[in-house]
Length: 179
Ligand code: HEM
Ligand code: HEM
Image (cartoon, rainbow, N blue to C red):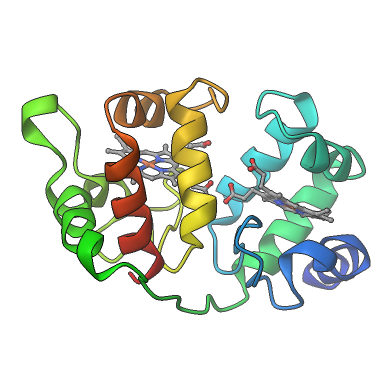
């Protein structure tokens, strides 16, 4: 059956709105923007929060309240909301961030982000998430978690992040915020 956007909106506004904002474009740097994200990617994350594969106590609690149908409905509703752009803050780092995003770091075998997340950061449905406009603080947190094995649910991302230092992570996250 097709996902039910009305039900999706209802469960979103009952709970999720508190942290991810009414239109899915969270204004709190630690909480990701979810609007216009690929619905399959959102469902995958909710399932992995619920099972504990992606460890986060807050989101585990939230995802535990949702059935498979609830997840499909809320994800379809979020995917239908337009993403709001963000901006890069650090003029000195953003050029490094752009180089990494577009070309990777060849001498350390770090693949270009653009190859999987697309040149404009819109991602590639269904498995490669949209990144553009995301809060840099959230992106830094995720890349650090991939690197440290705390978000161990993605082989490509663990390999990409394993070889990046803090400065490179900060640079690419800042570039993505304005992408
Ligand atoms: C992350 C959905 C409620 C705080 C996420 C992600 C999704 C999501 C899909 C992962 C996004 C990504 O990978 O890009 C939802 C839904 C909710 C809900 C559908 C309601 C049922 C909440 C609430 C809070 C919250 C109420 C705050 C109390 C967070 C935080 C993260 C997150 C901090 C980042 C977790 C991490 O670092 O791994 N949420 N959320 N969410 N959400 Fe929610
Ligand atoms: C997820 C950044 C390169 C495949 C993510 C996320 C971030 C990210 C921040 C989590 C998004 C969120 O939580 O909303 C980057 C950066 C890259 C890069 C900065 C370059 C340095 C790549 C490459 C691939 C890839 C080259 C493919 C070979 C994926 C996949 C996911 C993901 C499949 C989803 C993981 C999951 O389902 O949990 N990426 N990425 N990324 N990325 Fe990348």
